[in-house]
Image (cartoon, rainbow, N blue to C red; front, side):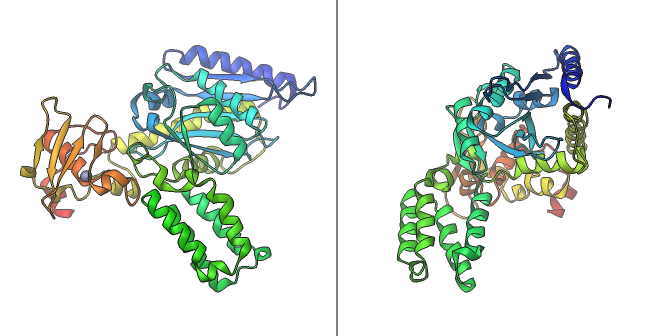
Length: 399
Ligand SMILES: [Zn+2]
């Protein structure tokens, strides 16, 4: 692909971006590049390559979750200079979907802020499901990245990915310099998990007290000190502080990681040393095509097992049609009677929530509850969290 570095490469990239913007302007596809400039020894003019493809634009517009919860993950192994690449994604009934990609030349707070700001200006006017900002962001534990994101989207709540948080804790317990005896590690880990998954702040405080009074935990001053530093940041990792109505019980950024994996394995095919022009082509052509095909395969009912298990609404058949009734005149609220008790659950079909425990907590993996599917089936509605499909008698027998 011709020139690899220097001014010619940037000129080539700028020409391609101009052409791309011209061709895609009615489809919501847009990109921009800022050349790296360190001439006065300042680092305030980093390299920024920001991309929002037509598909990403459509995800902003049509996917409700884009306004509720996004995931940001980074990787730094695509190009010759190891410039970090950030992928913003959201969850959907068809798995994780991208909202924007940005490549930049550093990971400081100010660089992340300007890279994300460039991306923000590329986004369509209806970005984040017309909210202009994501409600919640799940990230890795990088203070600089988190501060940069907070500057860009001040109204968003930032949370740590629970999976990564637990992994970091487990690594700490395993590290030989911390001298935790191997037979104690699982037990100490359980004490931490109990805090992370505590359902209320009251339970969390009690679990913290349990940890402090635990006989094994008391043997390790360093463990207690380590926990104390994280205790001060508990709003970031304890799930009781999360607004479950908008995070829908999703507490990890596995969706974003999947996006990064797709980039590495499929789009870049695990080969390194690309230049920026090649990266631009891969994101706008191959990455875009991958997601288009994936969405089509869901539309054609050729989805992978994971998606079909989560979003085809297994269990909805257990709800009797006669137990579902309309609750208001606007056809927004529905009532479903419980099979097991005389409770009734309220399903809000504007925001797609349900008052049952699965609907509130998304337990165990953030899937929509059976009541939502049952309402969808009975009244022939569509929900952004459920894949529409025709339910034949034969399907019902197989469930
Ligand atoms: Zn429910």
